[in-house]
Length: 498
Image (cartoon, rainbow, N blue to C red):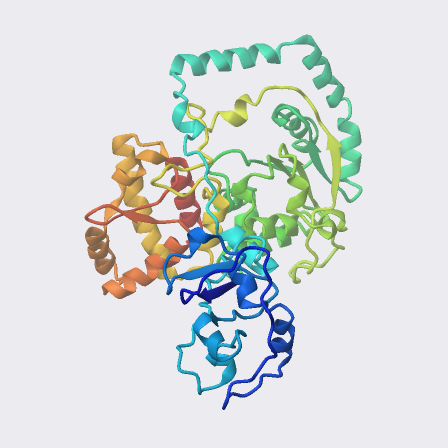
């Protein structure tokens, strides 16, 4: 804290001389200050002559010049001295008017408070640090690998397939395949003792499971094979495969919809004279078979005592699709024909390693391998690290209203048609295949989806909040920020659930 001294032009005594002190006389009419702060300050007050003798001569130029001298930093307030007052009060310091009361004539010079301390990361609480961290925007590169790598040509694709076919003829791979086929009798016994079989491991398992179905299952009952790796695999195609069983369609449907079809399939195989049903599913972890309706049908038929499930899986996290109760649940007991389906759901899995090291030629045949899958988006799409996936889009569509679904179907269908004409695949090209807002509003009004701008904005807000629809440009353009393949599969899934 600094002490302000007013010098009235008195000559400064030589350095080292000591002025004679006179007893302190209180000013007439002034009040004595007896506060604790004034008592602590009295010990630090020094004589004026003694103070002036310590000031160099170059600082004394004008009688009204103010000199700041650093004082004890522990002092609470500054004390103002005036040399002219010392002539009348015995050369003793006088307290500022703020301490004497209202009788003083001089203006009160208070120390102005400084700016508040800046809020730093150290001063923040734990809550502030948390919210400041999650609200900060990550700096991520927008150079997506799928947009930097050139697509494969037809010659390169043919060359890859040829190398994969040559690998199938390796002698060690043939020996491993023959070794797995030697366990067919064991698999057959396990099926008829209340278990369903799930095969995992590296390599394509389609050929071995197909041979098992031909050599054992088809000779002793009905066999249905479902290729989960196909894009068209789903609830509708699965039910159509079951409907091809001879005599099944002769039974009446109690209710419409997939629930009635499920009950008819379950009740058809209750008859003891009816041959059992063997369902072989390649890639049961496929996204097309993971919707709620498909899982409900499979988990019900898998526990039928006369229906046996044989499935393969290639994803390392396939076991997380089902709960522990569904994996270890037991088969349903025998129930009379025409009764209700038991309430238990599950799969009664028995896991087997079926590593073959065979290439995935059949599984990759229905996929577009000319381009890499897009796991990120450019500046016109969703931010990197938050790219939309097909299951996420289907989950969002399942939670919106019917009008919102129709609006998304309208926009996605127009965008898909425009992409087919322009061959747009990369996310950086999606904006030019979008639909202008005015055109979308006219189409929505014609199809009785939204009759006003407010209603249309409300429906679009559901998808914009989840980044399923993006907007931009002038005039405003709306588009779905995912690749053509994802848009096509989502529309197919929506069509199958109508």
